[in-house]
Length: 346
Image 1 (cartoon, rainbow, N blue to C red):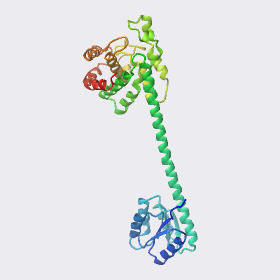
Image 2 (cartoon, rainbow, N blue to C red):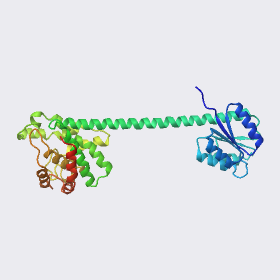
Image 3 (cartoon, helix red, strand yellow):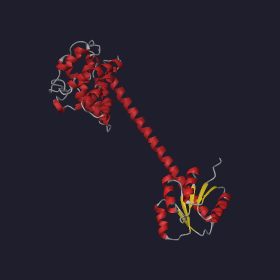
Image 4 (cartoon, helix red, strand yellow):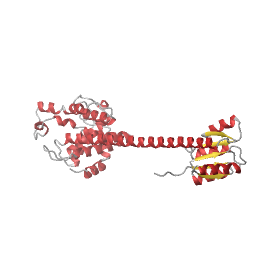
């Protein structure tokens, strides 16, 4: 495996020193560029992109400190080494503050020692670049894994939601429609885009507790007996128990919605008889979206209602079943709701 020769730029107004440096470093296998002042040196740097720069401090026009400062702005990862005849400690400290990597004084006693300094700085620069590449690759990997976990979690949420819905709606499209409608209504009610998106992702699990209800009750074509109704009313708690406690914001909201989406504004709902604003806003939103879509969908125990009849039922439930502040907002978005129904047909 061949490697490109190291590219070195020397910026110095001393012609004899530049020739000496060029001859030595070219004999060492490097490619050498020269400039006799700061402005020319920056131009050569921009054109050739060397791996390392040697720069004098005392030059006419643009001095070495100004050159170092510009080099640090243009390419802070490229080593700049001062080679200067001044022994003023303040100059050395200032050069380090402006971004120089090392400091060599003139006269140069040993070119081999200077070569060692050059190689040391270049090796350090390469290590920094490799660490940066590793860091970036690691960050990309973490992002990919995080996205993969998020996608997997979302798929589990959606599939578990469909598993519960499949019991009495074989297409599972109800959970998609009511989730999309919930998001629209949440935005209409003033929720942020982020909160509405979280609701969209959590809502499909609202009826996952149906998994725990027997077909004899869930699919019964006739009216439920009081005992059967009590069993049916247990599915919100079953859903919350299935979802359980989870640090994920989506899963926490899914559990809340599963538990409270059958609560009613007047306190006559179940399982806890919550009233008014004691019912979480997300559950009040889902209640309207869920009931409207359920009414307008065919189930084993009922035919689909016409849209206007379902809307009348929503209106009739204002202030008793449904949040009276949300119903008018829902009625405002009926065209968008119907578009969702058209897009996600059973």
